[in-house]
Length: 339
Image 1 (cartoon, rainbow, N blue to C red):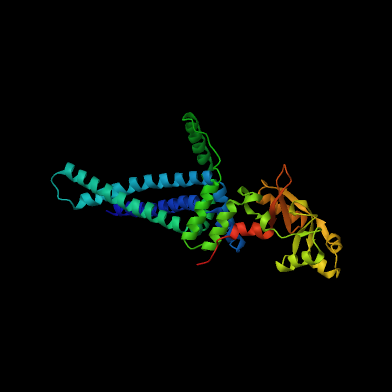
Image 2 (cartoon, rainbow, N blue to C red):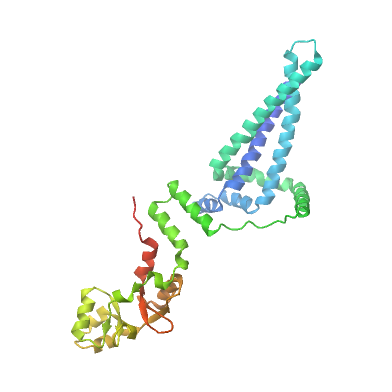
C-alpha cells in the first residue's frame, strides 16, 4: 500500500511538471514579441530572457516537447500501476482476472482524466490568456533545462528535419503578416476595445496610403484659387483675402500657366500695390504627375518644404489640380469620428 501511495504521489507530481511544460509550450507560441519588447521598455528586465525563447522558438519547443513526452510516460507508468493496485485491493476476491481487468480499466480512466485536465487543459488555458506572464516566469528554468537537454534536442531536431525532407517539406522561416492579416488584427483590436473607432480607421487607411495617387486626393483645377499677372493687383489681393489662403499659385494668365508659388503674407508685408509684389514674393513651384503616389507626394512636400504641389497632365502640361498637406492628411482621417 505504501509503495502504491508513493507511486501515486510521484505521478501527481509528474502531472504538475507536465503542466509546466505545456504552459511553457503554449506561452512560447502565443506570446507577441512586441508585447515582451514593451515590457522591457517598462523596466521588466526578465522579459529579455523571454524574448530569447521566442527568437529560438523551434529549439525551445523541442525542449518542451521532450519534457511533455517524458512526464506523460512517467505519469502513465507510475499512475496506472499504482491506481490499479489500489483499486484491485478493494475489489471482492474470487476472480483475479476480472478484478485485474476492472482495476486496470478504472486506473486508465482516472489517470487519463487527471492528466488531461490538470496536466494539459488547465495549463494550456492559463498560458493562452496570460502568455507573457507565464513565459517570463518560466524562462529562467527553461533556459537551464534547454542547455542540459541540448545534445538530445539537437539529435531529435536533426532526425525530425531528415524525416521532413523525405516527406518533401523543407524548413522555412515564418512569413510576416500580410497586409490583409494586419487589417484583421486592427479590426480585432478595435472590437476588443484596444483601439477606438477613429484610431482603427486611421490605421486601416494608412495601409492604403501608398496605393492612392495624386489625382485621387487633389483639389481639382476648377476649385483652385490662384493669382494671375493678367489681373490687377487689387483683383489678385481680393482673391487671396476672400479665401484666406496662405499660399497660392502665381500664373501668367490662367491656371495652366502657373509657374511659381506665392506666400500671401509676404505680399501683404511688402506694402506694395502692384503685381510686382507677387513676382518678388514668388518661390519655385513644385509639380508632380497625376499618377504619383500620395506617399511620394508627401515625401516631396517634406523635402522641399513646399505648402502645395501642382498636379499636371503629362502630355499637355495642363494643370489638373493641386495637392496640399491638408489633402494628404485628409485621406487618412476623412470620415473619422469618435463615437
